[in-house]
Image 1 (cartoon, one colour):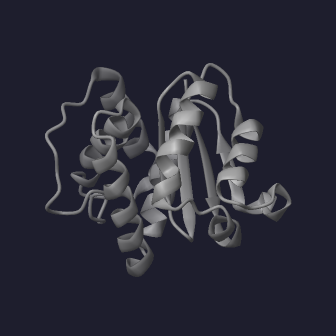
Image 2 (cartoon, rainbow, N blue to C red):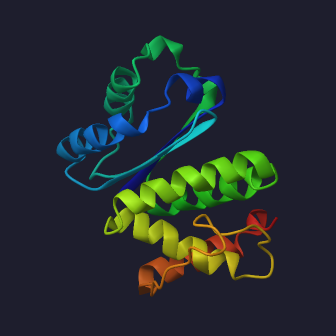
Length: 178
């Protein structure tokens, strides 16, 4: 099962992971969750997708604080969103990415961080699901933002049946148009 932790606002600045720490953090996360991890970390927003049978949000946030050299008490609970399950995680993620796209500057910074995440682990199945859903979503007329990988960075990705159904669910949710 895929879960999501999003940290935004001032908490994101404190929990921002520099590129040198991300691979070590992901390796440790894989041992804890026994699954793949995708993290996009910026100073204004960080998203962590992980695969695990049950949510491990509290344990992951403790380790995240350690790697970011921050105190867990620095985390403003209102700036942390956790989602359980594939459908909720991806729906909320893409809705928030659409909202972020209204701020051109921040969206460009997020795209750059996302591209680095993708480039460093192109075979990551979680990342491939995100990329596949994103490319399918931005092809829809109601979505007016650029893809997360940018206009010239599109990859060939065939949506599996369950991923296609997830993308269609997100599109049918009326709050996902921008």
